[in-house]
Length: 91
Image 1 (tube, rainbow, N blue to C red):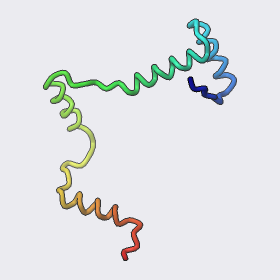
Image 2: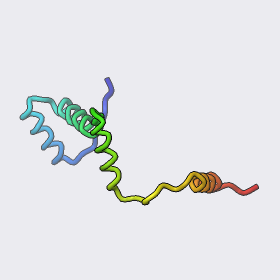
Image 3: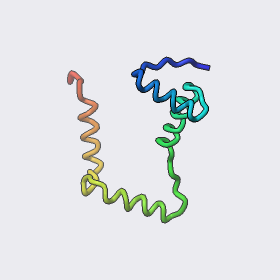
Image 4: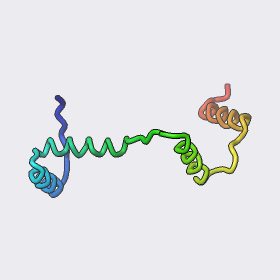
């Protein structure tokens, strides 16, 4: 098992210890549980369950700000080639 050292303000440590004790946990166990919970919350991916879910996804995408139309392929190539040439000496 890995050991991780944290640097935090004393006030945070005291609050975390108090909360861990209220939940019947050690500080270490409480911090691991809090980190797992945060990961699960931020990494939760909702899968499409029906064709209507897919349609709703694309409807929500359509209202996002952005260009009205996609550039054509020649414009994409021009931008990519300009990017590749950045920093090259030209020789």
